[in-house]
Length: 519
Image (cartoon, rainbow, N blue to C red; front, side, top):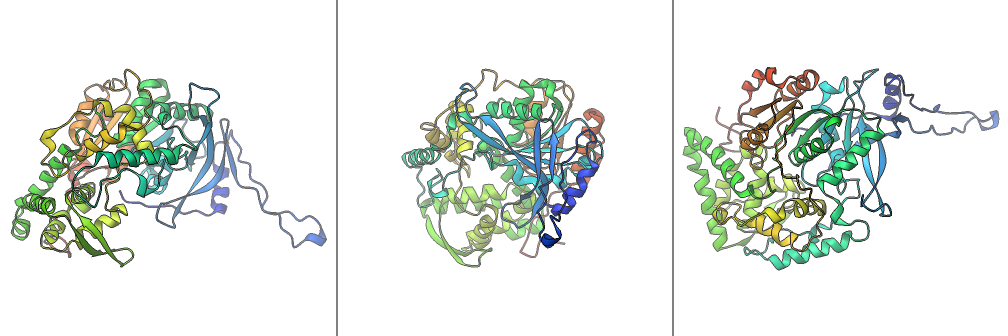
């Protein structure tokens, strides 16, 4: 997803405060006071601009963009909630809450809510992208960004990367004992400030409802991406009167056990992308069958994992890594997430098969910062181990796919030791509602394929599925989609929404060489 970040200085934020909710006054102090002629050169710093909404007082802030010096103007506070809602004496944790404020003098009573993916991503980390993507709607609506408990600034369940259970990069065999030990070490790191049992989706939904009431009980327009679509559905099931509309981008069905289809979905997406190459004469002449080349490379690495060197495209330093079938699968999976990187796959795989791993591993370094496939943060473990792991069954049919059975094996190993929260009896029941809903799916999504959106839509009489040609995972910023989301939220008529502008979307042309595609 492209990131366009708005940068605003504090003076702009203070000036904008005069144009918002007439019934609620911003408390902005004078910029300076002169105490006496003798102290005429002394200036008292102004108090931070604040905004009272409901019972919540927010302060003007800047939300930084990870790995960047850019930031987005917002209004922030820390919102206290009990960690264990069943125990009034449990510790209090604080959630990072931010609002992107509408430019309207009197904004709509409903409020947009962005629900991040993962599990484990922090909503506030996406502030720049969300500000740009929802710009048409922000003309009349405020946007709520709440870091879900266990993510970002909300008592994050993060462990040192070297201690988090990850795919080993020094061998091909799966080591369940090693993963269990790494998970146990992560638990020790978290013990001083968190109990992992209380970081599940439904508890986070209770947090969101508490925030809504504190903000004055606006109705929510939920916008969930990937795992955020699970959060949206669970919140809607439990607080239907709080929801006005829902947009689900890259849909996760309630019935799904996270992890069960990862290998199949990646395999399907890769085969569909590679079929584009074999159907184009120039691509087929240059690369033959990329799917066959990928599996030949996998087999060679299975038989002979070895250390490789490549130049880090960010630091320009030479990096050494062990390349094996697991690290290859991790890298290929990363490439499949976006149309632009998927278009580089045939070229990068071909280069690697001929001994040049730089294009494949260098791009992966940019995408992830590390070649190893991190299974996730502690919050991700808390969600999957509590909500899905007991439903995962062995899938021997996945053994020869590029991802293999590693994901399920790894989750089973971690969850055998990870503390588990409770799962409501109706958690995996299909969503049924007549709320207006718009479901978005990418044609080549390697994680949440279009069939997932179709499955969820079966219980939604007032919903519409839009499949975006040539797109992959997280598609809401593609083409005219932001305008379609705007029209949907404003009109609440998904069935009659004119989505013909999506016909202009096309797959990213496959790179024949590093100058690009054929003319």
